Length: 155
Image (cartoon, rainbow, N blue to C red; front, side, top):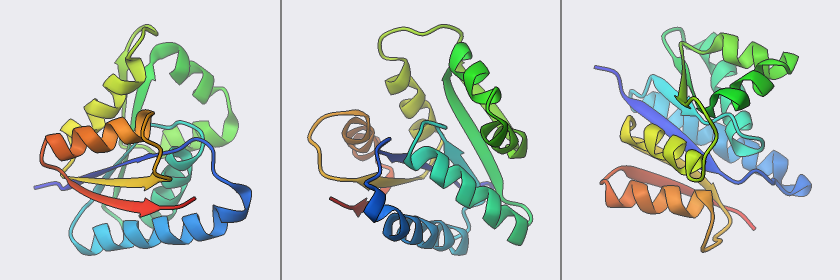
């Protein structure tokens, strides 16, 4: 049986914190792999989502059988992502690409986040403690639905 993990995190990563966050996120992915997780959802937003996708793709070369999964909030966003060569290569590396909604609407990003949480047993959050926003909402939803949540705090 497949074990699935997803990520949530901020789009803005403080430049001075990128090495520290990359190392911590990489270690969390390694921990999840050691615990038997083999499928990893990314929402493919800027910042943490794309960093997570790159790390999982790299680890997939070392660990055959790992699956990178994409959850794209809406069709036009997918088309924009696919037009960037680096991101297109990451999408090509995905075992599955899910486009959650055909069109943009209020709440489309929340729906994408819930889509990932609903299909995951583990949520890794890279979080700076903001009380509002997508990461805070996704963490709250993960707790409400009984998911394991591991939080990497940074300021």
